[in-house]
Length: 111
Ligand SMILES: C[S@@+](CC[C@H](N)C(=O)[O-])C[C@H]1O[C@@H](n2cnc3c(N)ncnc32)[C@H](O)[C@@H]1O
Image (cartoon, rainbow, N blue to C red; front, side):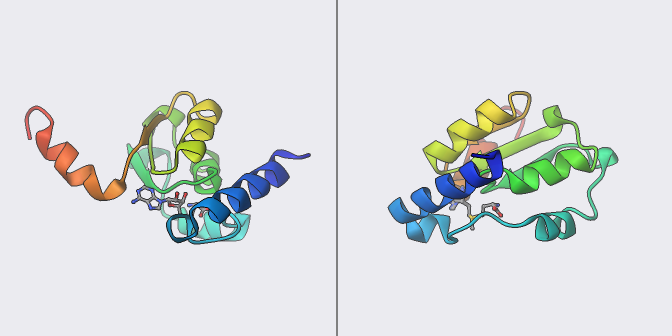
C-alpha cells in the first residue's frame, strides 16, 4: 500500500469514528494543497497549520521551501497527531483543540 493510500484509509477510518470533527471522507488533493499554499514561501517564517489531518498541506508547505522546524501543526485527533509527529519530527506537533489556542497563548510568558 502506498503512503497516499494508507493516508486515505486512515482518513476514512478516522472520519467514521468522528465524522463531525474530521468533516471530510478523504484528505485534500495535491491541486488544492498547491493552491492553498501558493502565497507561502521559505521567507514566510513560522507557519501554524490548524487541522492538518494526514499532512497534505504540510507536504505542500515543505515543497514551497518552508523549513520543517518552522511548522507548528495543531491537530485535535490523536491518531492524526501521532502520525504527524512521526512523519514530521522537526515540526512542532501539538495535539489540542485549536479553539483553545488563544487561551494557551495568553498564558505564555510575556503575553
Ligand atoms: C476536513 S479535515 C482537513 C484535513 C487536512 N487539512 C486536509 O485538507 O486534508 C479537518 C481536520 O481538522 C481537524 N480538526 C477539527 N476540529 C479541530 C480543532 N478544533 N482543533 C484542531 N484540529 C481540528 C480534524 O481532526 C481534521 O484533521
